[in-house]
Length: 466
Image 1 (cartoon, rainbow, N blue to C red):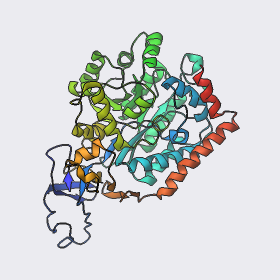
Image 2 (cartoon, one colour; image 1 turned 90 degrees about the vertical axis):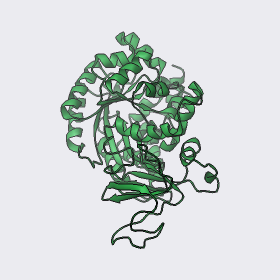
Image 3 (cartoon, helix red, strand yellow; image 1 turned 45 degrees about the vertical axis):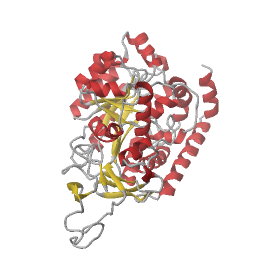
């Protein structure tokens, strides 16, 4: 088994020993007390996983998603971000807890099948009277068995106040703050082995008021949790911020007190040199979502320059409706290719891309001491990729095979030492049932929208002509 720990030298043929939910040892050769690939000499109760022909990496960390959007994939296929949002806001307003649970089950199962062991989720649409949407996705994460960092999102700036979303999908400031505080108190677990942590996440400068942004930051810092929002995703957003606030997005965030080591932004595509310097100097992280940025024509983030300046960058798949069926493992390849397309073949290496997907993500979520690398004392969140297949084996460097090509099959995904995926199949929930839950969520969402007089096809057509 080739081990790519991200931190420290790679081990061409080695072992990883786990006790409880922690890595306790790794080294070259066969594990002490065993013969290579055999159970002879193993102590009672020891479980041996044969990693022959595999590449072991840290479990991947997804730092930006909108799981509910699994139920609205394939719509507004040729739209810009603002056109896409306008087309889908009214459809999303129909969602309920059943839709969210089904979409989250499918979305998190899909992530696990691409080597993901920890995922954040930015849920910011909370229609009144539709059930407990946050609890629905938290339950789905518990069932699938991956670590979950839901970010309680919010919007209070609708069309009537100069924002982009229709008023039907925004909330009142006091209601948002109360619900967010309640979510943190109910669910956030700060323990080192935590499976569930909550962040505070107003949606964006074009859907959240300055008061919501500043009050949310105060709330998060009082509770000791992290902050997340969208920023600098498109030129439209840049123009909106200048027109509405007289500042470009990063400068606006700085004015509101939203730069710091407890903050990570989604996208950060359109940054100036000064913006990159501010993110690096303040320890503010970024979630790079290359497939979504490409799908919406948003642009290519300056990831290589951000890394050179010392800014932290992780990866995200973004919502499934703007990044259909995107596996987190595939975002390593997309990130590498996008950077090389913009800056040349030396812009990003395979191992840097792997670090974005692991330790970079762990840093964004404030968990670099526990996740993101294979080291003694860290949580046993691991992915074992089969790189010995009849085609994959032609690539001599297994990390190159993982990043440059399509994701290899997964032999095992472990979360805290527990198997979530074995031989390419989910083991915590029935894989077919998880997929069907996503289909049912889509059908239910579109039906609920039609009952409100909203046709997805008509909304897409209307947004295209706005």
